[in-house]
Image 1 (tube, rainbow, N blue to C red):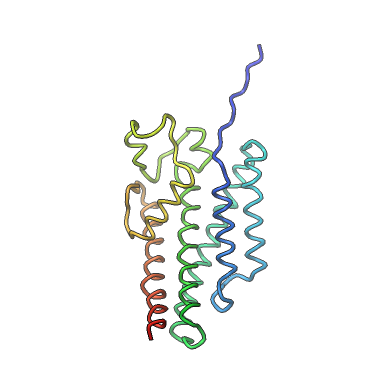
Image 2 (cartoon, rainbow, N blue to C red; image 1 turned 90 degrees about the horizontal axis):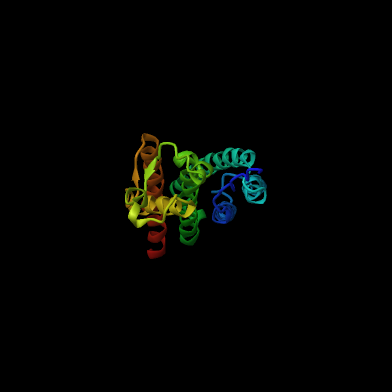
Length: 220
């Protein structure tokens, strides 16, 4: 009798695709003097990363598409993170050198856009980095984890075979940017701790410096 191959498991990709679309829109809506990347490059970058992610689902998650997805997602994260830092720098320069060229509303909207982009970008990075990425987690190979989730430490509180998915990493990134510290998820590796420190620093500068300056303009 012919042996039936086991069905390949994979994580649903629609939350990831929605996140990438949100990042592209946020980058595109930033004011021209603050935005680093031209609009055409932003849209091309988004399309380039969405295609392999969609292909993972359409091709029953073939390993080849997983490798392509991982490579382009990490490249997208690097470019977007660099763009976020550059956009934040442009905001600080605009506040210091050309404050009359920006209204309080523009500064506040730009700071919100930079902050949200920071959260979404790091959520994508955490999702691809932890335990070898979504493919390794779905298959249960589980290399050494970068974060310890409470469901992993207390099996009785999680369904059998529980694995973290993208929403768990989105919550991790959001908590890091708002609390500036760990919440229920504990970092286990040096790279995880350094990345969370970087995300918290970007969030802190955005909130304290840029947003507070915009509020001061409204109050004056």
